[in-house]
Structures are given as C-alpha cells and as structure tokens.
Length: 487
Ligand code: BGP
Image (cartoon, rainbow, N blue to C red; front, side, top):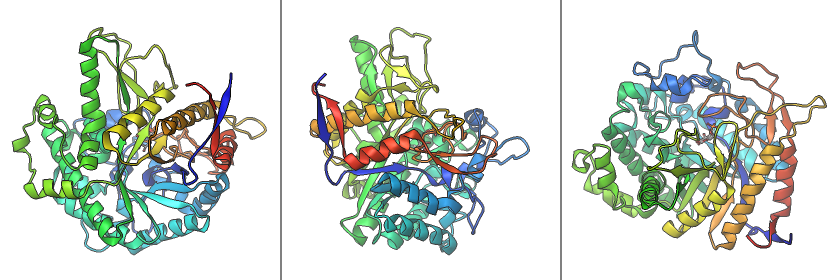
C-alpha cells in the first residue's frame, strides 16, 4: 500500500480537554458552592436517578457515591498534570471554570476571589509552558441554587447571572486567554436536559416548552458573552459547542433519508444554526410544533433576536464520538446505546464496550458538513473512546484500543483538511483520566495519563503515562501522520 506523509498546519492547536466538575474535586473548598454536578450520584444508576420524578438535585450520601466531589483532585495536582500535558507537547488545554467556585450560589453580585485565584494559578501554569488555555465558560455545572431556587435555565433570570459570571471571567482573563466557548454541548438538552439546563422531571424537564425556553435563554446569554468578549478585545475568539453525531439513513428508502435529515436538523443543526448564523433556522416552528410547542408561547423578544444576529459565535466547536443511523421502516430491536443518543446498529461499524459506534470516516463527514454549512473555523474539542484500562505487573498501561481509535480519527481529520475544511485544532477528551459525565464512574477512562483511583474513591491518585501518552507526544512532535495515498 502506498502512503503519503500528511503535514498539519504549523499553527494547528493540539491539546486535550477536561471539565471542572469531572476532575477538580475540592467540591466545597475555598468558598466553592455546590453545583448540579455535585448532586449527581456516580455509577450506572446515574441516569435512572436523574429521571426519577421526585429527584430534585438532592444529595444522599447514605445511598450513593459522588465521585465528582473528589474528582482526580486536579485542584491540588494541577501543576503536576499541566507539566505532563507540556511533556506531550500540548499547544492548548481546554478546561472549564466551575461557575460555583466563582459565584457559589449563582445569584451573588460579587465573585468569590478565592475561586478566581485558583484559575489565575492554572492559567499561569499553562502559560509557563506556552500552553494556551481554551476555556468553556459553562460545562454541565451550574450552581445548584440556580436549579433549585430558580428552576434552571427555563428561568430568564439565568441570563443575567450567566452574564455576570461571563463578565467576571472574561474581564479577568482576556489578556491571557484568546479562545472561549459559551456552553458545552448545548444541543444535548433535548435528550438530557439535567446537565446543561438544570432541568429534571420535578422542575419541568418533561415539558418541551421549558426546554425550548431554556435554550433560548442560553442563546441570548451566549450572545451576551460574545458581546462582552469582543468589547474587551475584538481578537478574542468565542465559539459555540455542540455534540455532533454524523447521521446516516439506514438505506436509500426516502423515508429513512428524510428521517436522517430531520434528525440532523434537530440534533446537529438547530443550536449551532442559531449560534453561528445568528438566527433560528427555517425548520424551527415545525420542530417546535412536533414537540407540542408554539413559538408565540415562548418568551422570545425582538431585542433578543437582534442580539443573536449581532453577536454570533466566531467559530464552531464540537465533540465527536460516534455516528448514528436513522431507521423508520425496519423497526429492528437492535437498539444501541451511545453518547446520550440511542439509534440503530450500523452493520458496517464496530462499537466500543459501552455501545458507542466507532466511525472515523463519520468525523471527516462531520467536518465537511459543518464547514460547508457555516463557513466558520471549526475546532474539535472532544473526541475519544472510554475504555477499561488495566495496569500490567510491570506498571505499564497498554491502551492499544485507545491509540487505534485516535489514530484512525486523526487520519480522518487529515483527510478533511485536504478537503479544504478550516480546522483550528484537536483536543481529545479526558486527556487525563477523570470521572465520566454519563455514568459518574472513574473506571471508564479516556486519558493519556492514568490516575490510580477506582469507582469507590480508593487509590493513591498517582499519575502514570499510558502507551497512548507516547503515541500522542510523537504525533504532536511530528505534526504529521502517514495516510494511505488513496482514500
Ligand atoms: C461529553 C461531555 C464530556 C464527557 C464526554 C464523555 O458528552 O461533554 O463532559 O464526559 O462526553 O462522556 P462520558 O464521560 O459519559 O463517557
């Protein structure tokens, strides 16, 4: 087989991604308030608990474990961890700021200085190694009080609270940090509103009117953050962030093709259209109607629409883990699980242990679809495979499945660059092992760096380089990859 060496652009942003609630720990230290993530139990029961009609972000330590409370204690290990990122050659490190460290209850007027000091130190440490921070302002971790007292994002007052939070962090860090994102995986809410909207059945998640209202409030809040950022410095780059799940029709039956089109609109395009184009897409009213919601019943004001139009995002960031298949005709019972998504099994793909279908070509397609739709720079800010690693007797961790997954996806990225896509960078998810968002487990690992900690919080917290650590270091160092000559 003939191969060619593909070179990535010189300024390509290689790095890794994490979220505060999944790794920092120190959940009640230095004035931090509780966040909704602190109230989500760990383990495979997590989704079931969140779906219970009585659950209202209550914390019940007698019954459940809460691995996020300790995370991997990045709060006290950040120097060691960032040094390891630097050793791999990271150009960027994507992390989020825990809102409840800065505004413990979410509705205060003055920020918590001790919380800000922590991020001062993290940013300083990154810059020491010429690692540029990429900050997600809100990643699945709003202050608990905003969910309990205000009912989550369906309440318009949240816009004001978020604006205050965004203003504080942007004003403090705009000189050191160029790249920002407003909300993590904003489109996940249709399937799972608890994490990003603070909505569970007991405060209205089952009424789609609340979901669309919450989204609208988030879109407005996002545009306000873009406005603040650009007023501070027009060169700051603020992105939206969506989960992208490349969607195929089961076959050429037009009914299935239309189902795939609709799924694409609802899941992949709706939020990014509003945030990147600055207006609701043409299919909005129909999509709302199909969920029993009428546009006129929502609190969507003219000044909101003007703000959305005036302050769209500068780039489109997304997570990509898998693709999905739409099938309206066969009704097969081979349903699969996935990253918040169900779907039908794709006979051409293999799946991870957790049932996520592995599809590198789907990433090339995603990049082309997104770029051709928005014509804005893209940023892959999450990608990876969660697996169950074991430490060999000599202490090594041979995570070949992890390398194989990432290698195939990096090749697909190279092909998309050849297709002409404008891609800023690549930050694989969970560059250091951390607590899973969907299961709250430690044992589902994505990292290049292994952390000695189990699902019950037992372990030394020692960090170890996995085999993939050296693979990634080599890739970044070469800034290139061997591709088959014909793709
Ligand atoms: C995304 C989230 C992340 C992350 C990742 C992996 O949806 O933005 O926070 O956790 O998925 O998912 P999980 O941890 O459930 O394996």
